[in-house]
Image (tube, rainbow, N blue to C red; front, side):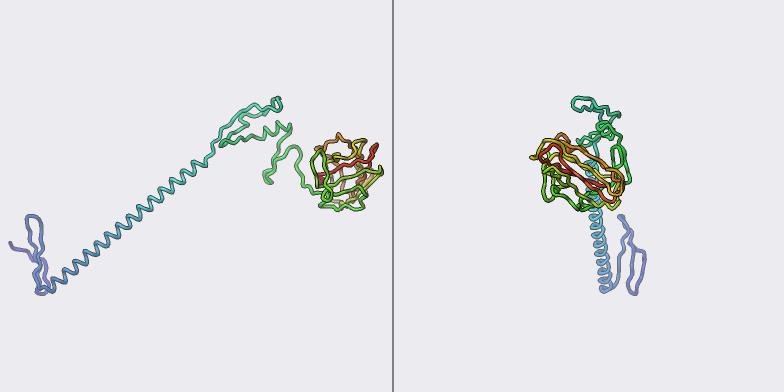
Length: 283
């Protein structure tokens, strides 16, 4: 079989033989050059093996990363599903002590994740008042807008107080078995007129408070509270109380930016009764 010469280097010759199963290259040369070629070939094989191993490792890393991403996507999907609101709107008939309350709105109720919510129409119907909203200040209110108020005793220290005046902090009092430690109590023993003063600094327009008969004191007669305003003509208001006066009822006195408020109190047809003022606010 005669081979075709395909290369030559010094005394070394490369011949290519064509056989029935393909081409075959035969090297003819010295042993040193043959060994060199075999080493280079072996290195090439090793490099190819390392490259193949690197590719396999990278493929494994990519597969692991894809699996991790897939697991994270499943977790995110499950989290979205668990946090999804399940809301159902309802049209209940609302009753108060057996009386039907007209809600004036369809679907005024909603069940969201087994919690019942209701619209502002329900509040308006229950309170028989208009519901208003101040979105900027996150306020919802009925009737008039809630103005900022301050506690009377925090803003104004009482002075020239007669005996019978006691701060709730120093001497808590009970009204209908409930203890109050804010505001103050006014005692009428020995049936004479007593007063206490507050320097308002001409900064306020209205005083509001709740008043009630103090437990374990005389229930006979009436309690008369009169508010005088310095530098304002006429007395501001007179409030007459008895044991039927509810402490839940808010009392209001117009202050007209007066400089000084003088509260005067006395009992009438009583051997000595006491009344407590709580939730006393200036506006």
